[in-house]
Structures are given as structure tokens and as C-alpha cells.
Length: 198
Image 1 (cartoon, one colour):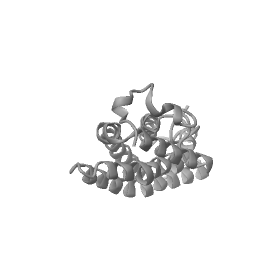
Image 2 (cartoon, rainbow, N blue to C red; image 1 turned 120 degrees about the horizontal axis):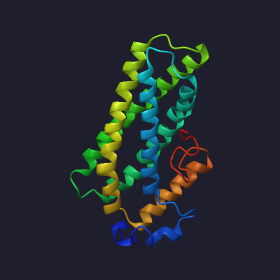
Image 3 (cartoon, rainbow, N blue to C red; image 1 turned 90 degrees about the horizontal axis):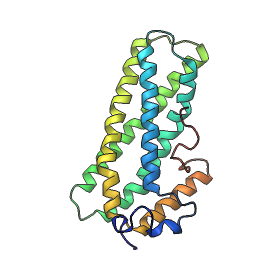
């Protein structure tokens, strides 16, 4: 199935076989950076409460919550994690690790949309009406997401680099390109495409 990522290094190996030269694991790393920036933005919103929330900041956060997290989780759940399960089936820790992350994804997806719903209500009204509830919701979200991202950076990405083959990376890249062609996935600068906080 090709050479292991660790044998290829960052500059060689299957890079030339990818249609746009994007390493899907590096794209995931960039996506984590973007997600952490969004979480910082959400924390700033929480810190302003109970004062009037910056509506422009909320407006920027909504599409990221609606799309970026969903795209990120879909890429992992539907493409990356199945490959890791298959390649790591001889490693006892792999399946429990991925089970836990998928369980967190199942909880995270509705939470993202719930926060986006509240943000859209604020945008429509021009103000927020329940700062205590909103603050609790936001802090629970950015705390849990920072832990989740740290766990993926510490465990999933090193595991992927260790056990996925060059052919596996090409498969991941093809999946990402397919999502992007349908307006749903990995762009050159991360899973969220151009919806980056500015």
C-alpha cells in the first residue's frame, strides 16, 4: 500500500500524486488551528456578557459553527477514522480512542447548531436576552472543544502519520476533494474553506 508517512517525510513520497499537493493530515492540523481561533472568538463573546454582544463577531461565528465543525467531523468520521480502524486493528488502543472521539462528535454537532441558532436569534433581535444561559452554553462548548482538539493533536494525528500508507493519504485527499467539489469540505487552507475569522 505504499510507504509509510514516517518513511516519506514532508517533502517526498506521495505528494506528487495528489491533485493539488495538499497533505490531508496537514490540512487537519490547519483546521484545528482555525477551530481554536473560533473558540477564542466565542470566548471573547462570553467574556462580554452581560454587556451587549458584538454583533459583527457573532455574525462571523455562525457559518463557522454551521459548516466548519460539521465538515471537520464528517471528514474524520467518514474517511479518516475508518482507515485508522482498519490499519490499526492490531493495536488495542485504536478502536476505543476512535469510539470516544466519535461519541464526542455526536454530542458536538447538535451543540454547534444550538449555539448558531442562539446567535442567529441575537442577530435578528439585535441583542441577547439571557446572558447567564448563553455564557454557560458558550463556556461549556469552548472548554470541551479545546480538550477534544488537544486530544486529536496528541493522539490521532501522530497515529495517522505512523500507520497510514501513502495510498491511504491519497484516499483521504480524494475524499476531501470530493467534499470540496460539492461545497462541503476541505479547502486548500483547511476544512472550513474561506470562512476564517479575520
